[in-house]
Structure formats: structure tokens, C-alpha cells
Amino acid sequence: MANIEQLEKIASQVRRDIVRMVHLATCGHPGGSLGCADLLTALYFEVMEHQSDFNMSGEGEDMFFLSNGHISPVWYSVLARSGYFNVDELATFRKLNSRLQGHPATHEHLPGIRVASGSLGQGISVAIGVALSKKMNGDDKLVYCLTGDGELQEGQIWEAVMFANHHKVDNLITIVDWNGRQIDGDVEDVMALGDLPLKWKAFGWEVMTMDGNNMTSVVNTLAEAKKKSGQGKPIVILMKTEMGFGVDFMMGTHKWHGVAPNAEQTAEALKQLEESLGDFAV
Image (cartoon, rainbow, N blue to C red):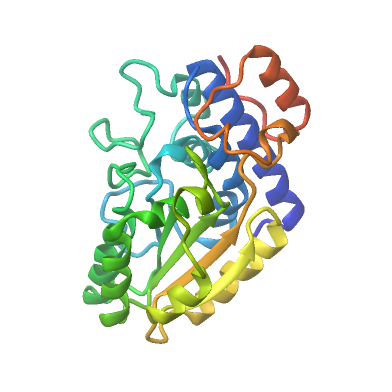
């Protein structure tokens, strides 16, 4: 079991990976990836019961699905750092014929990826199907799904949310990256979501909140969510994060949602992030 300080160091390395991957590719989505680094680090290094000896069925282990697939850099980094594939493969991100596509894909059989994602609005539906199959097969492990708050503007989300409550999919923990920003600006300005905690509660879900950029909050809230599973309700964690967290000039704006830093900006970002596990080779 990792302690909070160890997890924070891993998350810092993950953030370095994100910045370097997007810079090398000259494209990608650093903002949301940086914001979600603490969550994915906690999931893969502390919370989930999973194995890097990958199989598609996921039988007997917890499973994770990334609905907002554009933040693939953070997922690829965490998968590599937890042993699913060689860390140096991160240097191939978004390159021609790479297994590390801009949005996660399955055709190259990258370990850890069970479904292509990035068409926003679909991930919770997939996670519900997998969670139901686990219940039908007597598998007591959990399914986790991460979605963005801007993604909640998609109608399919709310159909899935109704379905999960109706069918008591209580082995599902959905996390919403509640950073208030999307590619075109603030979520409130693009299409306001209203009172999110009240809305999810009205749909019959167990609603929790957490500070997604505080590792103690992340670990403790996820542990509490696990305790609440199996009680007849699907669980949602509304996770407050800051897009671009860890790199001061990327925070407080939506402008780094899908923009790659240049060489000077990359160097400045890396000064702010501890290299704890060793950078991948280029």
C-alpha cells in the first residue's frame, strides 16, 4: 500500500509525462489530463484491485473506463507507470502507427484499453453494461468510469443515469471531472449544468464530492465510495479539479484544454514538477 506522499510523487511524474508527451507530439490535451493525474494515480496505485497482466474480460478485478478519452495522456502514463507496457513507449504518443492514439483505441491491442473512447457521452453506458455483466457473473469487483463535466451536456449521459438507477447498478462508481471548463470556454457559459449534486440525487444516485487535486481527499473519498457500493444505488463522485493543475500558467483558463506547449513552455512546466520515477526516453 502506497502512502499519500508516495502517491503525490507518482502523480508529479505522471504530470511530467503528460507535458512531455503532448509537447513531443505537438498536439494533445494537457489541461484535463493534468487535472485528473491525482485521481488516476490513486486508482491504479492504491484503490483498484487490478493486474497489469492484461486480459480483456477483466474477470475478478476492478475495471476502469475513460469516457472523456481526449485526456488519454494521463491514462497512458498511469498504465505505463503501473506496468501495463514499457514506459518508453510514451514517447510514441500520437505518432504514426503508435498504439498510443490521441483517443484510446483497441485495434492495436494496447494493454489496459478495453473500449475505444472519446466520442463524448458514451462511457457511462459502457461502464453500466460491464457492471451489469459482473453482477450476472457473480463477480464482486467494481467498475469505475471517469467523465467530464462538459460531457454532461450530452443527452446519452442522462439516459444512462436513469438506467443505472432503475436497474440498481450498485457496483459502479462514476467520477465527474468537475473543473468548470471545456474547449470553448467555461461550462457555465457554453451550457450551464445547474445544481449538479441535486440533479444526480434526483436521478437516484448516491452523490459524493471531493477535491480531486488533494491526494488525501481523493484516496479517502474513493475508499468511502467503495464502502457505499452494493447498497442498491450507483455512486457518483463530483470531483472538483483545476484544469492544468500543477503548472501555474496552465491553470485558471480553458485555453490549455487542447493546446501543446512549445519548448520554452515545456521547460518552464517541468521546473514545477518533480521527476520522481525517471522520465521516459526520447
